[in-house]
Image 1 (cartoon, one colour):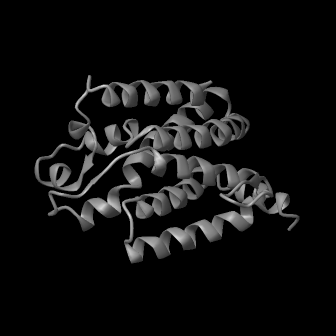
Image 2 (cartoon, one colour; image 1 turned 45 degrees about the vertical axis):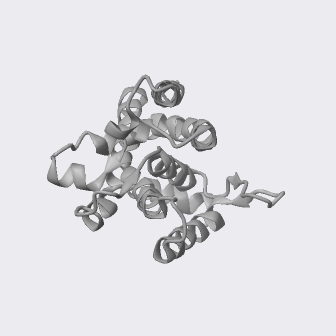
Length: 203
């Protein structure tokens, strides 16, 4: 339920930006504006806006499938009420946390902008892998699902490699730190989850 609310809110704000009803330039992440102009709100509003229909659709589709898994396990691990609260905190804080590296790196670059919920979605995806490491995940052009425990290190290596090469406009650094945050966050509040992970792996 919470995942659907997040999706609806994100779609609504993105649509308002697509139609020009909202000024996307005031909502997206701009490291210079956050650092020098103290517009810290951008660390959160950047997760509500997207660069196009494809960007929005892919992020929300991924969130829909894996967010529900994390919601369920958070309720089991922390109880219904606290589980919902922590799930929302995970998602919202991941938007900001995933951008911190780029904030420090590009704080003096006025031209550096970023937008989208990818960092938070990566956090949710990796939190779901922590709970279900053998869950199948589909990757482009691969017709069979890849187990989460195989996907996770490959994804992190890919993000690290692409961030170093800097060949495109995709926020690979945000994806990387969002994913790491998604693994760490549940363990901070419930270290015993690692036992569940090892049991799922048959260890």
